[in-house]
Length: 403
Ligand code: CTP
Image (cartoon, rainbow, N blue to C red; front, side):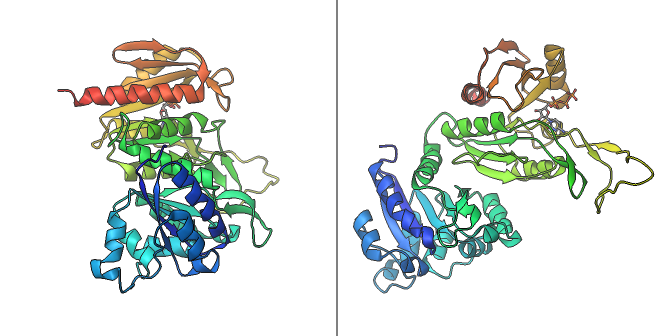
């Protein structure tokens, strides 16, 4: 009963994916949650209040100005009485209204009034999901601390089109809810931790870029492990082929400069873990047009240095209490890691030898270098490194509190 005694307010939005919320209700209740349903007007076109009421065993709320409920300011009561609010399916329109703070129906009013964490499961046509307006809404909502699960890639129920926009499956939504609500327990409860992950892409021209072999797997695993220990996690990720970890607020960026801006926007935090393989250099200037082959031969790229994100934060005025860096080395691992510790203002450097199959691979052999010395860990899967590092971070943070 992972969700025992949890009060979940489920806002069912309009869209064909609403049918999956019937199964979602069942899955949430199996785990011990009490589910209070709110149906938007459009939801009623796809599922009936009768089935939602029967499955939840609760009254189904629908209208903002319900004469009976509004007497005790129904939306405020509903908003306050939840441990978690789930919006499924969340349409492009709902996301836009939320991002703009519009509360002109019961769902909108609850979403403005609640202080509980909010989890959105978007579902829409791939063209709508990739529209700049929807992307803006998503980034705004993520910046406000809302959580997302999905959408997944696959075939759309209504059009047969394929792409990103399919609502996450009920069990994925449950896993995300569990991860978020786990945030009340665990050794990192009440802590906010920032993680960077993945490579950065530095454009050469509109179609080409400089990249590296980082898959983001280690950084994403660390974000997930920290969330499981109860931390509120902000993950700033470069371009990766991985799903956003459940219960983690993930911000997507491309370049080192975008990553720095997203990191600075997430501060202050209690700890920061810099796992991203940030490109050290970018090309100077912005080539607005594709560079063409010509009689003058191959172009030469003039590189300039990117900001060092770890050093900027580690030596800056808003430095978190604990700063962890990674050092990808192919030789003189310990000397280089120790030098990095000082130069970048880190408390801990996780040094890994990347001369083998680490980048993009599944396992990692690391050494933890701090001012107290070096700790060697055996070769293990990246997920195990992540779990162990998350526990180590919890212990170190607890120590920073002790006078
Ligand atoms: N890092 C960063 N911003 C950069 C470069 C690196 O935040 N522009 C962070 C990485 O996330 C990692 C650490 O710094 O935590 C070490 O990165 P690495 O590339 O190994 O070190 P460099 O400083 O680039 O040193 P070197 O070129 O000597 O390898």
